[in-house]
Length: 202
Image 1 (cartoon, rainbow, N blue to C red):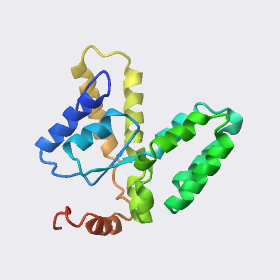
Image 2: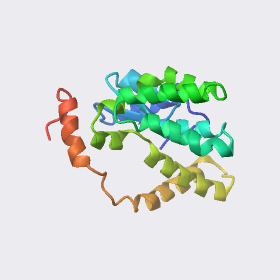
Image 3: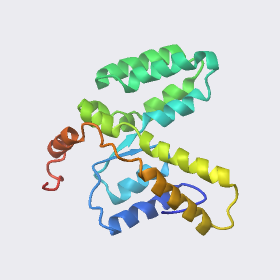
Image 4: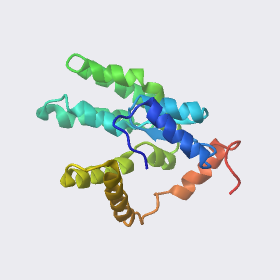
């Protein structure tokens, strides 16, 4: 576990370097949120990693700038992009989204265009793999539970006391991790084909 006041490239470089020093030899795909420093840190240590931006945080962030009356429609239009069955259809839906919303919310369309290469990798994967890599929702769920317990506790006298509380809460959270990843065996076989030259012998 690491603690830091801010998340930046230097912090994440430290984390990724430690992971490599502890034995991580390769990362095929990294699904990350929209922090600028995290992808750079991963690519500097594992240059062959395919960076995949999670669409969910972008949707949640975008909805903060949309009126309550428009939220449902706005979210549905974004969903049509990231749940499109092919990249060609995703691009068509993006164009339709921009035509509809750019006048009132131009920054959202620009952000999608600017990060399109890091958003679209799942479109080249079968459904089984897309479901396994398209979102950081599981991690966000854990973060939400940790924020809840730390918020209820209030201030901590030092970092050590905070880390102890987070560690104990993680142990409680992990007890619920009993369900396997859906279609994981199928996805694993397809990973073996996509990353044939890098996949270890199972």
